[in-house]
Length: 124
Image (cartoon, rainbow, N blue to C red):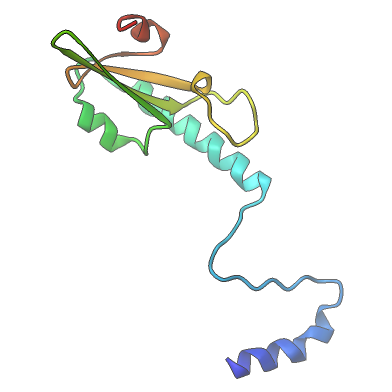
């Protein structure tokens, strides 16, 4: 540690006009990095959703995606509906995800019955 401080002290005069940052291991990415990250995530979500098949098992779908942005669960009679929402279309570049920026995946008794607003109309 003392060697590191000595090197930093000796190098400081050479760094005029530069910023030396010391981190505790946590990194806060700038807007550009976050921007690219959410775009990549949404593109990946759209690609995965486009490859889904009717009847795919709930757990299989859940395992192939990251954590859903929103989830819903409802029981009507003897039927259980689960809805997973994944961000696919950002409308507000504010870093927050809302349901209107997501595509819903609708499951009936743990089997995929569809995705999007048309599928949602099945359970409303």
